[in-house]
Image 1: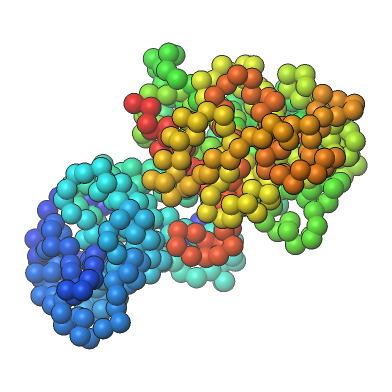
Image 2: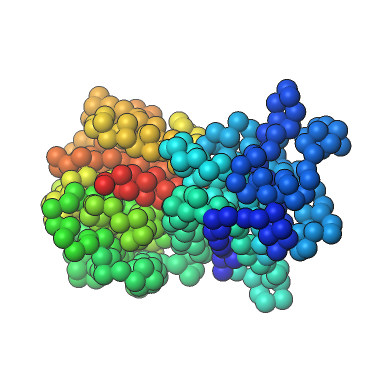
Length: 506
């Protein structure tokens, strides 16, 4: 159901005549007041020499080509072996984000062509900035190829995967980029699968399949269902409205031999495989179309945890995927119901469309009481309020740990999965008071107009004294456009952010 994923090959050295075995060539270019400039090191030098490229002649023939980041000029090539075309890829000033845009643009340009492509985009240096730029470029090159379709055999378009050859001098960076892009592809597959196929049991099967595919004894998976969820009042209240098989808590653990004394990170992901809003039915109804992606938080943490077997950081990771369907049925929870979350806290339910925080509360409390995490992170497409405040470019991040917030902000800038540190406003806490239970789960009774903040304040009640971060990815978790690294739909936001943060545990 996914379109072909590109492959990457490495080659340490290249002679000018070697370029004839490729279908296409891609060369990084810049333009300033002195004209057009090619990267003259490494592979680029071989290509420029073999093609006898004349920068100024190109400027005269295509004067409007500015070599802006992501701007591509395609030139036909004749009489040079297999090579049929040359792509001049604008990289601006070659900053990390400029190279990310360039990689995405090139990926989109050749998507589905089945080419072997020589990419000559990097110098041979080894600075940290260059390494990050290489990772950004190659990851974007792969991620921009992503596509998902379910079509009959007669309606399918023939799509072929591309193979890119890049310099062996940057093999570590290419390998890291592949880890990141693989995680994005895996998470997007889960997110884009329609909900008539996807349910909590299906999510458990996919988690098991990804763990098996990792071929690592460090990675294990277990699933709680039925009577095993007796204490998980939030998960049952949301998930029991759906047909059998019902809700699941999927626990995926990365714990290499000898890791007992390493830091323990627990990730909790919202896994609502479809959200109707329950009795508090969503309006307008077409807003439900995107709700197959309401399990994007669980998809991101699963992909990130499985990626640990390739990166091998010195950290233990446990992912808790809190999976349920929020449906309308005779067993659906009602506004005014009182449920008991894991750990005993009672909650008055006011709006059944605020179901995500109920399943997350169970996961957070379970993590705090049973797993002894050093860090506790939850990821969820939780509130429309977060996207109203921050749009599609930033996730809302809530934590009282300013040092951890800064670390995640820095990682977000490097990965282009940006987070914005939002305030946990204690003055809004009275909105969570209930006359009949310990808490009410929404701020509907007190109109503070800060839905993302009050949702975070609710979740905070279940984390004990842990170093906790809440990531509300409702904005960047879905894309309304087909552009750059994204296709319309789920983005898998959070996977790269978590992988690079976890990789920092050296």
